[in-house]
Length: 52
Image (cartoon, rainbow, N blue to C red):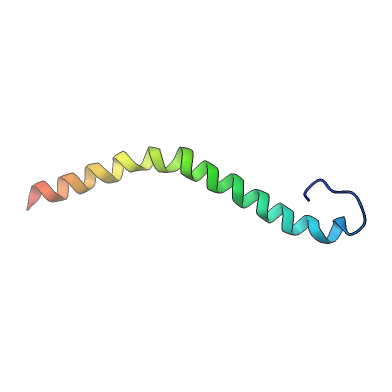
């Protein structure tokens, strides 16, 4: 849909852009951002548990 050039392609392109952008951003968040942030948050949780 994103690279379509036929009849009606100009109507479908904005929706396709949003869908592709969402898939790419969700993939990056899941595979890159979450694994990087998880140890940081888990260390804070361990510190909170050991204080009490």
